[in-house]
Length: 79
Image (cartoon, rainbow, N blue to C red):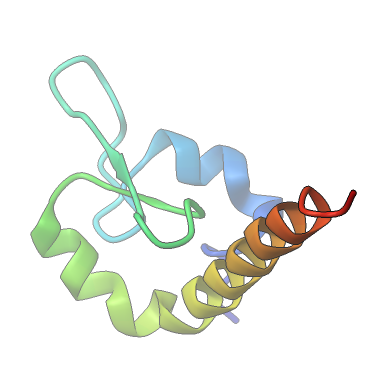
């Protein structure tokens, strides 16, 4: 089972590209997945290559984030 997209593996995800594994250093900048923030990538190419492995966890987390935002927005609208 691939666990690279699970919160238990957050530290590793913060330090290296989820696709190629290149380590974050001064000359290598990583960007978080814009939908879920669970993993980071060194390039668009790596993000595209990793998408099939990441898609399920990404969609689940993105849904959770949207629901949290809606709940907070709805909660603040009460008198």
